View 1 (spheres, rainbow, N blue to C red):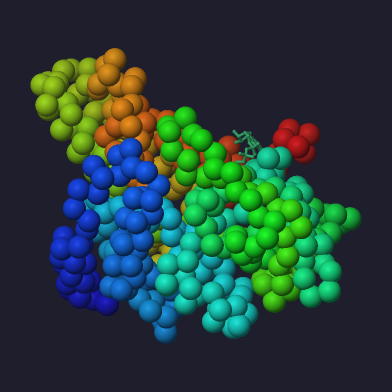
View 2 (cartoon, rainbow, N blue to C red):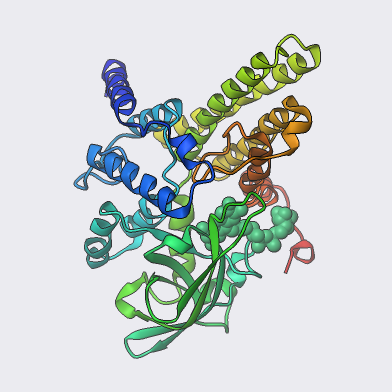
Length: 396
Ligand SMILES: Cc1cc2nc3c(=O)[nH]c(=O)nc-3n(C[C@H](O)[C@H](O)[C@H](O)COP(=O)(O)OP(=O)(O)OC[C@H]3O[C@@H](n4cnc5c(N)ncnc54)[C@H](O)[C@@H]3O)c2cc1C
């Protein structure tokens, strides 16, 4: 697509978003009950799917799919610019589940599950456990083969939106005898099956965006195994890679919206001339711009097939740091009032303008999808070729 065509596409997306974004969604989601949150997400998902903007990253031949990376970037940038709701309820389905199925699933699994995703089925990711996060390979949830079924017993935690989910991407242990990675198997589990129970985790913010999942003799058909038995670690890499890059383009762009809110707050307080504030703002604004540029450069590398291991870690690490700086300044800008949050906004991004809450939420990004320390290890060891971390320093 030429530059002119891309610009035309941008105007098209911008126009459509302008006409279709749910009006007043931020106010409606503040202190919203769960049903209202689900309703808004469902309605927004349906519109985006119909327009083809929810699945631009899917391959050609699937509804909305086959868009180039440059076009996908336009959609993400415009969604951020327009301050549309984030599809937090459908994120795992659209990215983690779909991309895993496209890369590793059988044709029968694609035919069975992908239409369901387009029809609004909600998925969650069941990888982390109470004693297996950074060291994911040490997970203990068991999948025992009995005939043409696996019997699942164990527990997952921090599973985003699991309390609403229809299906789960499950990484479980089928063999405990060899190296930890070699004994893992990847399964697609029905969250409504007998023996599954879900306990939402109350967060300090008042929200409960993730949950614990317990499995008590849950049956999964062998047909719902992705890849071979014992090959789950390789399949899990496809899941983990699925959200790299484009999500961060959206998130970094969304920080610009946060910056505007901050400037508005300062303006309304008559504090834009405060030398201390100006100095701090002068530090954060270039950082936000730099984060957008780093995300953009990363995407250019992907478009030109030059992505190196560690590139995505740099973007995520820097985004998590800059976001923290931005929301910290937001808290400061409000003085004592900034210590209090009046109510949380379900499914919002990290910059709601409710700074105390945004500050707490910003910690999500230094942990989710691999903590800052783990990203630094990837950059140091696998990108820069520095000596590997001695085994005895690693957490067990
Ligand atoms: C918002 C959010 C959403 C999430 N959603 C999901 C989900 O949907 N599904 C899912 O399966 N999981 C999810 N997670 C879990 C997430 O993947 C884990 O929290 C993360 O991998 C860290 O694991 P942990 O919490 O067990 O911490 P640990 O691994 O116990 O780490 C504790 C601390 O030790 C540090 N540390 C660990 N190893 C090293 C090392 N080698 N060197 C230096 N420091 C180290 C870590 O950086 C961290 O600061 C989510 C987490 C968050 C915050």
